Image (cartoon, rainbow, N blue to C red):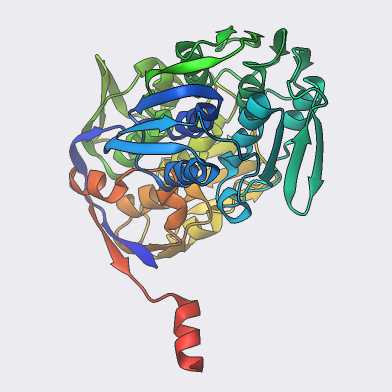
Length: 432
């Protein structure tokens, strides 16, 4: 096991290269199951969620060849297995995308109920409702989502999502590209990674239109063929480094981004007194003066992303005045606030609302990452805090951030990895 140790209170200077988008990669890799022939996927982030998904494809019988650090070639032409191994599928939430892709390819699938971060109820009812509309019968048995069709092929249909769910939108796109006839999905989510998945599918021969709007039309095709595709930069990783500069101070050039994807985050940081200048595919972020309070409500894209809520909260802990955050997407996403209080933050939570009274300084303390984005927010807070902070359960952070220690160290952060004994191993050694 390991933990991160941060000596905070140091401003950040230099440049950071942003990796490929985690939320796009975890949809595009399962999409390779739909393709007859090799897919060369570039700009893949080196994160554990990607490793888990590639390993699942190997276990199903797919060929996965690592070309270099950010490029893999995947060929699932010879996959026949329709059951995802239980232990492998339980490791991440994005395993549910295998349900849509395997149903689309085979007309049947057995996928473990998803794992991933635990921050409240995240139902998959919209996924199941949509798959049923496409002609699948889905049931839950012994921890598996088991789905099948009578004819072996899904049929196009009209689907209305009760909630603009990102996961359901992507899963239904995967299921529908090889379905017979036309599928129209209404009230879809519009996030950049949804557009990226549609572009990937189209580059392999699919016919998907409307991604990025609230109506997506998919005309089913008989097969997808191999090709090459490069994943978009990670909006949330870029936003996390922006908040790190805002909290700790300094000036950092954040490279390899799509500035339009960052506008919802940039606007709030500018409101808080942070300078953000666009320069081609980079943003230069500066903060030398005091931070100002603001109010934030998380929403589906193009609103402020829920995946940036804990990180912006870390910055608001140091802003002058009282700020209010309203979580408009998920329940129970404020578990990290108890950890922030260890640093001296003043936060009160009531349901979906957090009230943050800015303090003059935070002081380092031990913290425990409870999920991916909360863990990243604890790093942001630790970088700004005076003294030493330690973060445990860092496996959550490594699910979604490539080389976060190296990237932060290169811009002046004093952060390192320390190995610690596994308590279970220690217990068993004492017992023996």
